[in-house]
Amino acid sequence: MIRFVNLSKGFDVNGQRKLVIDNLNLTLATGKSLALLGRNGAGKSTLMQIIAGNMRADTGRVVTDGTISWPIGLAGAVHPNLSGAQNARFIARVYGVDTEELVDFVQDFAQLGAHFFMEVRTYSAGMRARLNFGLSMGIKFDTYLIDEVTGAGDAAFRSRSVTLFHDRMATSDAIMVNHNLAELKEYCDAALLLEHGKLTYFEDLDQAIEAHKRNMG
Image (cartoon, helix red, strand yellow):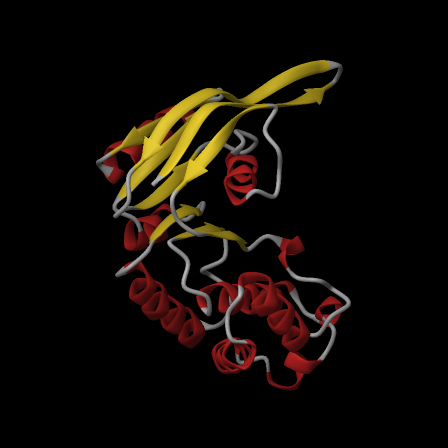
């Protein structure tokens, strides 16, 4: 369960305050993989950061009774001056999981070869995404936050990612941002639509996608 209580967040744009989340009150029940839809600049990544605890809201709070991942796909989720292996060890300590188990899992899943022991700042964007996805999926969270990451890698890696993701979703939930609507249909069974600071829940994913398309004009 994730509950938003009087949640608001805005930014100063050209001397004016723009609300991207406007007094949000909503409860997300367990048992769903949710697509988070909205136009560019609507505040989707901001909302994900607030849910993860990486960004403070202006007012209100997020209440949950489970564990939540960091936003998978976020460039800043790993330290660029540490190697992939060192990042895995650090994250294992932060989240209280077995260090060597996580290192072994990520090394096998991300398939970075010798780069796994090199500094992350030397990685390509795709390699960072693979590392980040492996790190997060190596830890059993109640809710995974996924921001534009599942397309990383070649066809074989994407296939392994889909299989692993569905395995995790058997016991966990997800909130996913992805501009590929067909891919959202593959992963998600309901949706949230963020428009002008308001968040609307749709039990029917196709209805949400149609509403999103209308908003996009």
